[in-house]
Length: 181
Ligand SMILES: [Zn+2]
Ligand SMILES: [Zn+2]
Image 1 (cartoon, rainbow, N blue to C red):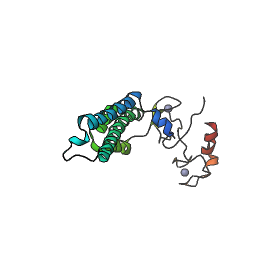
Image 2: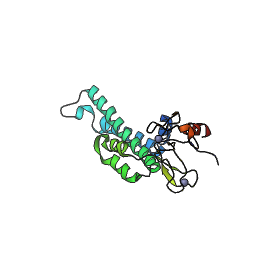
Image 3: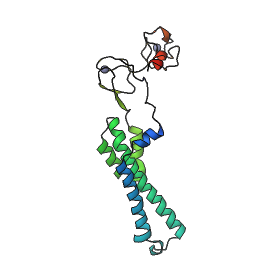
Image 4: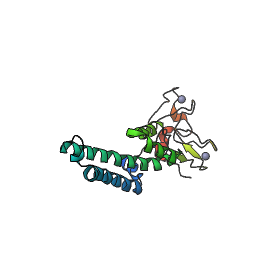
């Protein structure tokens, strides 16, 4: 059986991985939001119809910044719709929070409260969180840990940083797992 990649914390994802999560519909929605805001600012409520009239420069600034704000919200909701699923969180609930909480507060709350990404145990396919060391169903070792105190060990460590145990004496030393994976 091939050994999986081991990790003790959040799997490393690149910025482009994260951007790839944003679904097409939310990119389309972002464009529509931006265009709609421009319509409101330039057609429905142009600068001269404000009381008192708005300076053209300020009007342009507001139209762009409000347009960007609306577009970013649409992108955030799209991202949350995908990201929440891979973390076992209620996607609809969090999309609604992002939609109704003003000023991007919903998105900030989401990033503060989001759970770790869920992956599958390579031995029995049980859903496991990234911080688990062992599978709760079959005891398969998922993460690197010290063979004595079972706390996290990094693959580069020679000795456990908590109890000083020589990690090379473990059955499968943490630092060898990096090469197996
Ligand atoms: Zn398992
Ligand atoms: Zn230890």
